[in-house]
Image 1 (cartoon, helix red, strand yellow):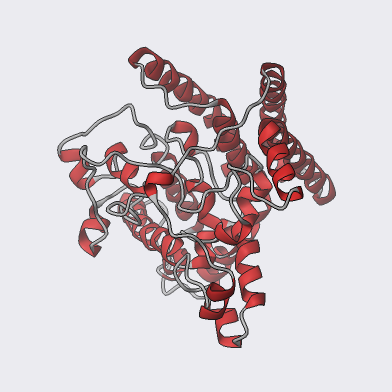
Image 2: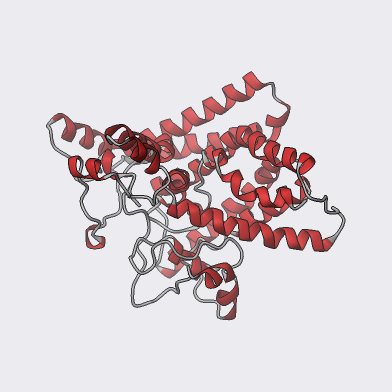
Length: 381
């Protein structure tokens, strides 16, 4: 069974837990869901899986090649110690991958998708990048060199990913001793914050011990409520914009700067760093948490129903695509993926409604709409 097929089987469980969290939030008077944001988050997860059909060939292919040609030894698949050690080693590699995704601009350009939601719920957990496969595999090469068999690597990677689903909730409070050792809802809420005291903390996947060891741990403080999202908000429901805008803005700055060294350097500096000449000519406003407002759109109920209905059709079509993708001819697989991504783009356009119209009108008038964020400002952390 392929990893994509396992995700298909897990999807009803994900959706059931999302529905349960939604019901609990309503009962408590603490609902954390909005239709447009939820459809966008889950849609980005769908898009990630659809594009991942192609990306896995790169990531797994490189891993298998190194395992077969360069591995120092080949560990036995039937040893439980190999599986346990591989899971711990993978989680440590994930910590450094995740840390780089917040500290290095080119990795942030991929990872930013997961942080764009200004809500925090189980739907946010499914909000994943479609470009992470391009460079993320680099961090897991030590496992191949150490002789971790590909089947073990693929399995522990899936376990690490699935574990992280349940920690994306505001309905579970502190968990005592568990919070000290493992990534928990409280620990991971901190990770999704834009507050200064919380920013870029708690990178662990399963174990938060790595953060305690390497000085990146921060504890949730009830005295400072968490504000979710990014410091340069997307202000769109478009899945293509979510995945590509930061890359576009990095490219724009690399063209604007006059120094050749800076053209390369800005891709590997912390997110938000800009060459001095670009920052002088295209200044950005400083982040002020007091000015943060959640992105909202005014969409008629009938359009919301249409978007939700179309989204359900996309979910069903995606399940079929992922289940049979491994056996499809390449042209058919590419056409199916393009159709699904196009449908997700259409849903985003429907949900943006008047906000997009207002932004377009503001640009036409030479001004900026209240909910619009300048393209130059989106690349910052």
